[in-house]
Length: 368
Image 1: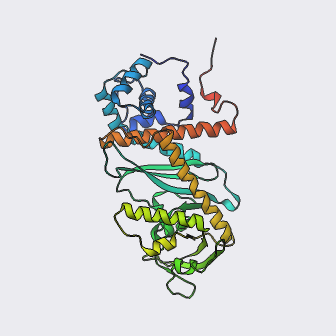
Image 2: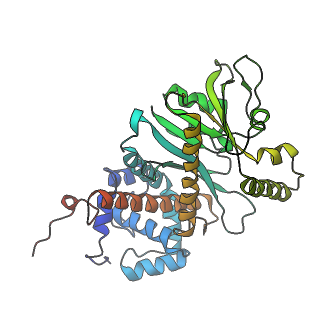
């Protein structure tokens, strides 16, 4: 069986990275012709299953009816178990091409770093974590990785380059990660908890951000030079920048803190409730590059990655994991991410090369 010749799958193939067919064999996803005739038909089946929002039985039935492939549920499950490494390679290569974008003046490139969780059927907690980086110039994903629940949120997990400005939430402020960024010429801009990593002020005394932030009035911006203590390394110079939130916004943040504590069966720490009234960040960006107020303005754009996660879960149904087998589940998540990256590539090309959004020379020439 063969799918219709005019269904435009060839357009999708033009968006894939060079060497993707050979990678299918090298990653042992496609080793012989059985059920699927080549890597293209296998990839098509995997992506079809990812976006189909259905189980194995319905997927193989629809794939058979559409001419994509003819196989059993068990055969599809086996392909899911053996194709994870190939889909991870595809995702990494698509992200690499999306990172090749213009930078801001001074060679800076702001990137939001975060992760989101995915649970399987009848799950009682986190099973999988999708680590994600969003280029804030283009709003494209430029890196992603899938780990199990033990894969921690680490800045150093993210590939970094000189000029990158890594924006991240509270979980990411670790001295080792900040030092890793500085070592390659990147900068960090990370939200602070009131219980943040040890720091020293300009006089070499312990610095606690909340104690300084409480002296601020609403709308006032405070900035203090600090040194972040890094184990077995010299202290890392940087700045703590903070502002006090307006009362309605602070009240909402305080309620959120109290709700989180209640879910965990704990009583809210008064210092956590007090810290909810402030935005406090640590950055290695020098003042010559970005003033204190501009640091906080830049950090506001971190919210774009939260919107990206909402799109992945609401539009592509990333949160509805249909598999309980670990290897099949991970492959399904990776297939979803490949679909998202292909869509981003198509959209980026459409913005730059109107009206069709793909390379015409990559398609076979039509002959009457």
